[in-house]
Structure formats: C-alpha cells, structure tokens
Length: 463
Ligand code: FUB
Image 1: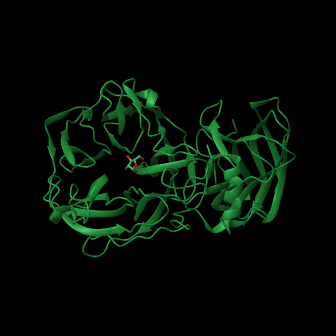
Image 2: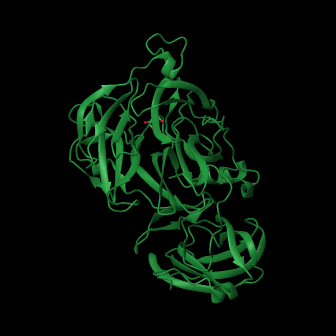
Image 3: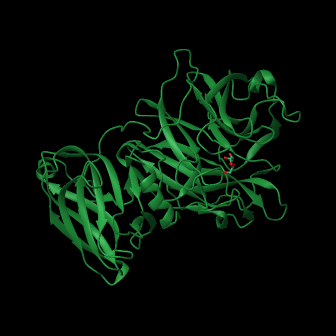
C-alpha cells in the first residue's frame, strides 16, 4: 500500500485535487489495466505494483468497478500468486472475459517447476471473484507473457499473447482448453511497423496485445518499442490477420517506461485505459492505471490519445440515497482500503485530514441526514460532510465513537443541510493523532429519497 508519507506528498503535489480523477486508483499502485463491461458496470482488472518496487514485483491482481467511469469501487484482490499452486512469481498483465455465466482471468506467471513464464487461467462466478485456478496447471507455456482473449461473433475464442513474439491459439468453448497448434503471428514490418536500431526486434511490437473487433474490423492494440514504450495498433480483416500497422494511439509519455492498453465501449462512449507513473513515488515499477474517453475516426481508425489528469467525464450521477460503499471514490487522499468483516472492503488507516471524494452526487431537492457505518479501535473522530472540495462547504458533521475494534461496527448519523442539486461530495476525516476510525458504507436520507429514490433491494438498511 502507498505509505502515509507518499500520500501526504500526493496531497501537496496535486494542486487542485478537485479536478483530477486520473489516476483512477490512489490507494495502491496499479498497472496493466484490463476493462470488462458487464451488466451496466465497467470492471477494471489490474496488476499491483508493490511500494518502492525496483522491478515488476507483483504478487496479486486487483478489481475495481464503476457505473460512471469516475467513481470506482475497490473490490480488493480476488486472485493472487497463491491461487496458482504451480506459480512462483510475477503476477503480470492479464485479461478477464465472460462466458457461460463465468469469468475467466488469463494471466502470465512464472511456472515454479520450469522457471518460465506461463499462462494460467482463473475462474469465478462473479466478476469480482473469488477466482480459483481453473485447471491446476498452465493453460499454455512458452516463456512469453501478456494474454488477451477475444471471442468472435461465431463463438470462436482466441487467446493471443507474447513478448518478444506474438502467438495465438483457438480456445475451446469451455475457455480452459484449446484445439489446434499454438501459432506464431508473423511479425512483419507491414503488420507491426518498423523498429530501428534493434536488429533482433525488427517490428514495433513489444508486448501487451489487446485484441477486439469493431464494425467487422479486428484491432490489435499493443505496447510498441522499448523502452520507453508507446501504444500502437494494427488492424486485420480476420482474427488471425493479415495485420496492417496503423500507427500510434498513445505516444510515449507519463513517467513509466511501459504502457499497457485496454479498450471498451460503455454507455455509448469509447474508453482507453492505460498506465503511467503519475502518483507520487510513481515510475516504471510503481505505476497507476488511468482512463480517457475517445471517439473513433469515421474510417474506424483510432485517434491519438493523450494522458490527462482530468480523465473521462462522468457518465451519469451517483445516488446518495442508497447505501454506498466507502471504498467507492473518484479520488482520495491518505486513504487505504482493506477487507471488511461483513464482506467487501472498508476505508481505513485514516489520519486527521484524509478524505474521499465522490463525484457528481445527485442530491436533488436536498438531503437532510447522513448515516455511516463506522468502527474504531483508535481515537475516533469526526466525518465532515463537505461539498465542492475537501475544505468546501460544510454540510454536516458526524461524530465517530471508539467502538472497541477496527471491525466492530456501529452506525452514526447526523443532520445535513445545503446538500442540494448535483455536487462533488467530500468525506473528510478529522480528529486527533494516529489512526482515527474505519468507514464501511454511507447513505444520505432526504426529501429526494422519500419521493422515489428508493434504496435498491438488499441495500435498504445499513448493515
Ligand atoms: O506489469 C508487468 C509487465 O509490464 C506486463 O506484463 C507488461 O505488459 C508490462 O506492462
């Protein structure tokens, strides 16, 4: 997790945190984004760079989800190296696809017995896991990395991966076995561009393929050149080629010598996920995932996309009159997350002045009270309900008592006023020294809720 020092620096280093929603995650370093749209939400699967890493020291993968591309819920780590009994290290870049009511997570890891990189596959019945090893051994192994899986309209699934080469194999409908030979995709300069100065890698293709289809055209978006990488892409009339190099999507930038792309359409928009070194302490081994909205050119080509700190515009608003997880946030400062005793996660390790930003909260005609589920074995303190900024308009203050345990939960409520319309909500945690308290969830009540903002089933009451 990001150390407290790094988070303090982060607060100082971002002049106006209110404008910044990239990187998506501030609580830990994340890398290699792989988005999946499922049932009206975007699930974002990432790797996890350890603090102070000097290599790709990665032990687990993480999941976040959002209904609006701005407020992301942290679902923790439902798969790690220990999931694969045969794996010893390097929880690197993977992708999740949904099929047959299940979710398959293809990942590269080191095979303990061979010492080579191999492709494992996790399976779960929920997009947030938990994931188990689907077959108890590598699905494929040739020492190369970065699997991406694409299911064509005819139901045929393809697994692609590779660095320095590029491979594919046809997956069977069970998604955990394949038919036919593992096949090498010819890395021609026509297909993948021309790299200069590196005789053993004549094309731009480096790693991290992301293969998908749009309007009958097949796209392979990949990390190009090294190092530093940029994101380039090729297109083809079919899933196995022939590929034609189309140019740069995202030029080298962002303070990480790798980059890694994932692309989805969501609610009528197209979104490009990538990583950079934008958090304090960030760099090539301490990366962070981010997202930009984009539009395809009329001929189907991809535009040039630039990293921003603003990120994508919010797609919709957030309903404060149903229970919201405290680990749902557009931005945070000084905050960490951890598993909560009742399921899901809570925010914790809160020091005086730490805060969570929730963007575009639709208060309607007005909230009258705020309720939160809290626990404290520390000092207790206060949740300041603020609008527009971490020191913005104070709408209410809830006192949090010491409950006797960090997972000993109680409910606190306080009146609020002035929370009307659609506003950015800041929950600012204040008190004395040391860790103050944990927050699991929160919810507002008010006229809008009474008029029709009924809580969703199962969320009617605070746990
Ligand atoms: O995160 C480890 C490796 O770095 C990934 O597998 C590559 O795509 C690069 O991002």
